[in-house]
Length: 297
Image (cartoon, rainbow, N blue to C red; front, side, top):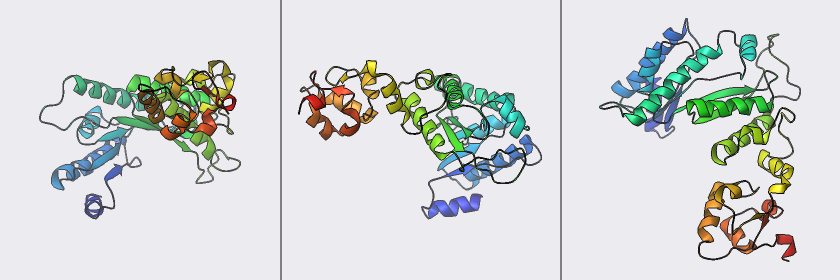
């Protein structure tokens, strides 16, 4: 692994390494092999590129901390969002085994932010992440984004990844997915996750127990807007940053440009187009100087 990594890195084929493994013999045995590989890369091969390391649930906390001092990012995969799903499809994993190292890593990250490590590499400078499988068990989209939101708040995760379930063998425990992997559902979860991380949305605003799954015909932001017409139209020349972010077709870069541009003059629809706003998506949800686009023609 070390030799291949260095050869690919010298040829500019890669910028970093994602290091993972199935469980060999035991979590501790596997994590020790991963740690030895990581240690060799950093100390013998002098590899200073990016390394993302997978932590094996149930491994000794000492090994987890040692890896955290050498890796840039670590991840402990939730795999399935509920204890029932884990018990059915991944009986070797439990929520306690998964959440315990997450808590340990989060605590170490918070500690190094208060008292930086002296004479050592920064503890997981790129933070930690996790992954959930979509469609293997019957959890709704609402359950999945609610769990993701709780993980972000509790463990300061940098990212939750979603992976559409792909059946790779005929094991009777594995569900059959009509139509193949739920790729569009995976995409909607990523879009909703982005809204929660960067746009100020909460999981309870996007879905509920009465409406537990995303609209496959509309992206989550547009679907929220259509369901909350009382919020619109948003006045471009007066709305604050977070109100602008709720408008379909306006991203965080466009919202910042709008706020910067209107300091010097009042904006109209032509200004918004130059700024990069997607007018064909925003025109039903905004006004400029009190007028909507279809009234200004």
